[in-house]
Amino acid sequence: MNTDNLPKCPACQEDMAYPDGENFICGQCGHESPMAAATEKVEAGLIVKDANGNLLADGDTITLIKDLKVKGASTTLKVGTKIKGMRPVSGNHEVDCKTEAGNMLLKACFLKKA
Image (cartoon, rainbow, N blue to C red; front, side, top):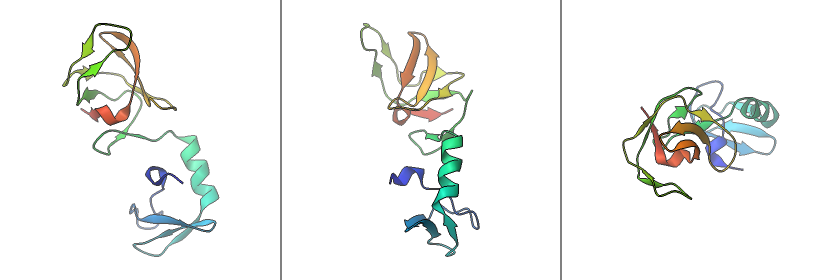
């Protein structure tokens, strides 16, 4: 199981829940919750985090933290470039956005929330 997608504890809201059998157990308060309920919640809403761990939502403004070469073009997206109106998507490249080089899919690990 991917530890980035583990839910917060519903009782204390800490990020210390761990899987145990068919339940999640909170290491902070000891609360147990069924995995089936957490899986349904994660699938309903796409969770995408930037390089700093902040949640990205539809319409957020993001900033590049690294120069990115554009495949198939001679342009480079420069560090510090602000991009408005991003949209989280599923897949290897988690962010769909419109840049000066056109519509692109970017990896969230090269972005931070502005």
